Length: 274
Ligand SMILES: NC(=O)c1ccc[n+]([C@@H]2O[C@H](COP(=O)([O-])OP(=O)(O)OC[C@H]3O[C@@H](n4cnc5c(N)ncnc54)[C@H](OP(=O)(O)O)[C@@H]3O)[C@@H](O)[C@H]2O)c1
Image (cartoon, rainbow, N blue to C red; front, side, top):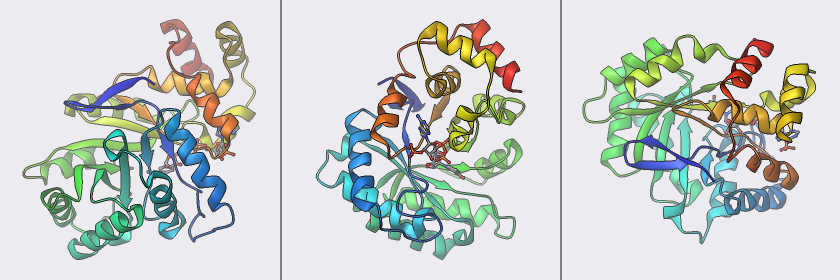
């Protein structure tokens, strides 16, 4: 596994494990629980110890499955992120969501708690104040945001008194390069890590034929998935969290590590998909 500082003094695997769709989507689906728990454990054993979940996923069931998978593991070896949904951003709701996530995960503390989506109807001052209370109470080590523009991220940071936003988690992939324009430079300036979600565009990256991709994959003896993930993690301050419950796919993720695209290949890919 390759590690990178997500914030000063805290190194985290640059490749983590997403959990959207595990245990259901908007509501719990328990049909594949046993396979899913096995897959999460396998991911962790492979080094994908940066786990990304949310209260929204499977209406809390994804967190329960992560909790089941990590039960009995050395907590200090894991970096767990969860997120509060946008209808829970008032102070009391947020604290309630935080505690409920901890209970479902079966832990005393998460490493990172994110505001999942901005909600213009709730003052950011109130939300960020509640996030700071979560840190003070020891419910989370760090706080961050998700799906925030550069401007909103700066505003959220300005509402914090004692903490810093350490992550902005956004959609970023070869098929969606928008964060390069404004957000990534702003993250670098503010010392915020960018966690790229949907790095494979839910499999679409495999379907769209692309001769540049195929030539580069052939040169390195890699698959399209491995090249697409490498393209993301080749960038400073970028982490990513692909999701899979398929053991073969989980193994395939690891082939994205320990090598790098050349600068020319990186740019060629960016242009080929833009
Ligand atoms: N903050 C947010 O608003 C937000 C939004 C979306 C996602 N996220 C987070 O980011 C994570 C990743 O995003 P995502 O799950 O939406 O999309 P993704 O990681 O781009 O794609 C996941 C999909 O790709 C398939 N897949 C994985 N490896 C494959 C391979 N080698 N060959 C073929 N198919 C493969 C998976 O199926 P199998 O399971 O069958 O392998 C799954 O259906 C999420 O799980 C979630 O934790 C956050």
